[in-house]
Image (cartoon, rainbow, N blue to C red):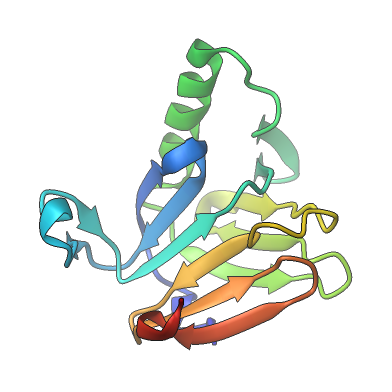
Length: 153
């Protein structure tokens, strides 16, 4: 399902409601919703849902999303995330079937690792909106689905 995402450029990093991390890949274009026309979205959009994450350069940890606490620290973490991931090419995406840890590897030896809380049975761990108008959802628990964006609710 995600093979076509490999070799795509991370064209935009942003944070949604609750400071959840979102990565846009591929060509940017205006949102379809009239109230969001002033914003751009990628062909692929990966959004975390209350899932902790870490960024590594080679094997060295450079950012842990659980550590920033103050508004200033959170803003610095957001800027560092944008600096390290925007403009990078995705070279691999792996999901560990045992613990659902998801590893996105980028060029320049950067990695983003998502660490879902398997005990949290309320929210999806992450969602991937695809150019095929489908959304791949991982979680809660060991569930996953791939549905049309028009059939989500």
